[in-house]
Length: 191
Image (cartoon, rainbow, N blue to C red; front, side, top):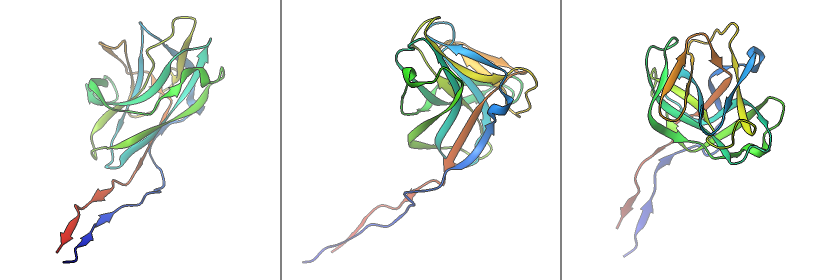
């Protein structure tokens, strides 16, 4: 007897990246250092819109050889959005690594890719982070921020790996992109 395998799916494999939220590098005033010990995360709160998180950009610079890798991470949100936003719990998803030694000694937008993606709930707050837990005071990376006249609706937050701090007068330079979620329907076999 002949079997027919039918696989239904709705997918677009090469979807365009849609900008979900950002705070431009034109607002850059200073850079916050990340290395093993005092600060390993710099993050910015933003609002999800139902797309699947696919890419993030941060405005990064290095000093010294800066060993190891840096990552973008997504965290759940706690606190009051825009004034005391902080990350919560473990990272919901972590990007592919970027070698810290490959960063420039001048501030540059660095793209991180999430594969698989993470579907952002529409209207839900999140914290998008750059994470680096290597190096030392002489060999670290820095994330660009605006501590002069920030205007983003969210706020910057940071962490030493266990405790979060919030800053209602600082915004991180960031871009967050998404694609339409891909929906698969299970295969059907007909005898």
